[in-house]
Image 1: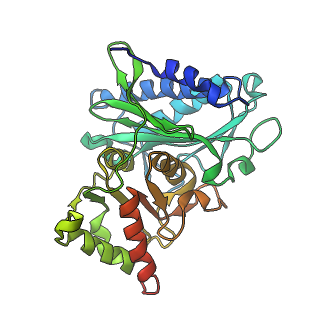
Image 2 (image 1 turned 180 degrees about the horizontal axis):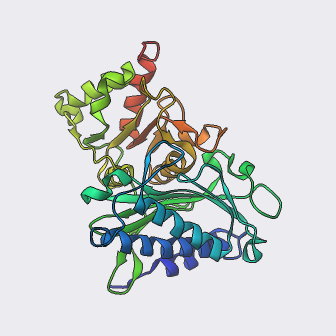
Length: 337
C-alpha cells in the first residue's frame, strides 16, 4: 500500500493554484509542523506542568488554559518563521499580530485561527483541536492590517482543523474537495488516510448543548423535539451526541452524517461562536464535503465581517438536516426567544 504524506500531497496539488509559487504549500507544511508539536504536548499534558489555567482571561472572557497559550505561541512562531504570512488573528489575542520581518516582506497570506478549540476539556482528557483559515492579503505590502481580515468566508483560500484525540488528524480544503491526514507517530508524518471526504446528505446525530434549551429560539426548541420524535420514514428519533469540543463534534458528524447547532440564546443574542476563525473555516470544509453551514437564516460564508471577534449562530452539517432545521427557524422566526 502506497503511503502519501501531507508534504507530497500538497506539492502534487500545487498546480491547482497557478498564481501561487509554492507559498501556500509551504504555509500548509508549517501548519503541519506546529500541529505535531502541539499534539506532542497534548499527549503528555498530564505528565508536565502544562495543565490547568494561567490565571488570566482572554479577550472572549474565558479563563486561559496553559495549553491554550502554548498552542497559540507554537502556531504564531511557525507562521513568523515560515515567511508566508503578513498577519495573524487568534482567538487568544485582542488585536491582530502584524508581521513585518525580512522573511515576510513578500508574504501573500493572512491566517486566522483558534489555536485550541474545546480547551475546557483539556484537564479531563477529551479531544481538543485547532481551527485555521487562510486568506490572500488585500493590503499591498508591509505588515498585514485589520482590513486584510475583513473578508467574507467565500474569499478563503484554504481552511482546516487539527483534532488531537486517540489519533491526531489534520483535515483541510483549498476549495478542491476535503482531504484528511492522520499522524503516523512511527515516522512523524501526516499520511493521507481520508481522501476526498464527503459527508452524508443526512444522518442520525444532532449535536447541541441541550442544557441551554430554555434560552433557545422557538425554532430550535421545535427542531430538537422533531429530532426526538419517532418516525421510521426519516429514521427518527435521532441520537443526541454532544462532546462540547466543536472540532470533535463536527469531525464525527462530517464522517458519519449529522447536524451541529450552536444557536443564539437569551444570554448570547448574537450567538457565541466566532465567525472569522471558527465558523467560516468549518463552513468551508463542510460545504466542500457536500454539507451546508448557515446562521439559521443565511449562508455562513456570505455574512459580512465587521469586527475581528464577531460572533454568530451556527447550523452546520448534512445538507438535508440543515435544510430541515432552517425550515423550523423560518417558520418560527416571528416567535420570541
